[in-house]
View 1 (cartoon, rainbow, N blue to C red):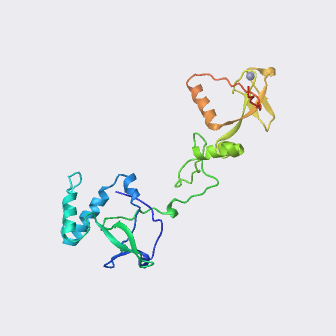
View 2: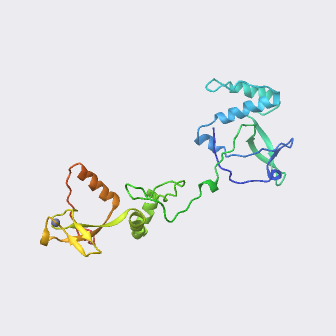
View 3: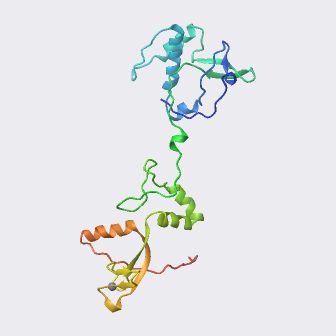
Length: 244
Ligand SMILES: [Zn+2]
């Protein structure tokens, strides 16, 4: 089987026609048969052409050997070309098209796939309860995915865009740690101007840093498994790479 999208809609009068005035419903690119390895479509068309002409219902059980030479011979005996090609005339100019064009009846169905069902845009979306990242899916009003190709494009032009998408527009947060004991177990209450590390007391050195909620979740999961973590913070530095 094949699938495809309509590239252009012609008026029926503009479609090419056979000498008897028969016009095809659709024209498709023969290269599509090679890439998808669906040469059976041609044989199906040949047999259907013969069946339509003789008014018979041939057996078309799949995986059974099909005698294509016999079909070709029978087609020839009825005055058709062996391979099912015909002479077509351009519907717009009426001129003979100097090419062997395969034309045959074939079974086809309409794929119910429309832009209106797929089109989607979003500015804010609900977030996942556990990770606090935007949920996905059009049906649940989820966020739009930044894929690897978008990331590759933006990494050369707009790092700020990536930072915005992966932090502000996702699960980015600001958190505090005590630099002295590298622990997350600190007390911070901005309203009461309270910044404390119970382990270090007066020697505490609290710092604010940007991280993500999913990163904090991972640390919480480690903690739940009795695995301790220490966070070593380093100031952001810009280092020029030397050629040597
Ligand atoms: Zn501390």
